[in-house]
Length: 163
Image (cartoon, rainbow, N blue to C red):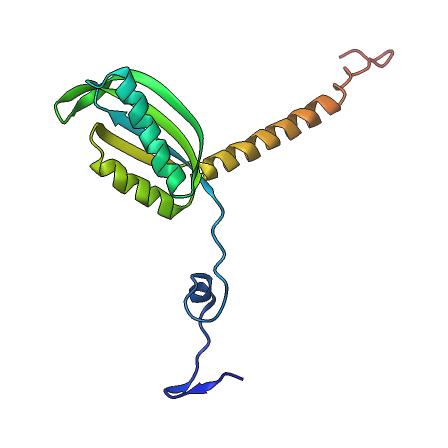
């Protein structure tokens, strides 16, 4: 039975609202960490030490907000498809990060105001990795089935019967 309050009988909250943590005394469980790729293009006029410092600074943004940087790839200077802020080239850096949506939002906010970063893009890749793993497992299973079967024997000739 639902309790009766000053505004009338209490209503049950839909499961979707309970899942979001609205109402009730449920403990909010954190979402599992997701995997993101953060690619940013830095000003090509920066030197190597400044580039390293900028990449370390972005890593610091991630780690400060509770994320984990899995790997950092420095792709080097590449030509842009079109000019961005009067730059025809840019220094590309890719970070693979484990964390939640709030982490990504905060890191993007900080990268917007960081001098030296011309553009950035964040992509969630955990779903794609899961799909690729399933495809790989299916392919391996079908390969095992194919190898497990003996090749079909050629049809035997029956004596006296010619095709």
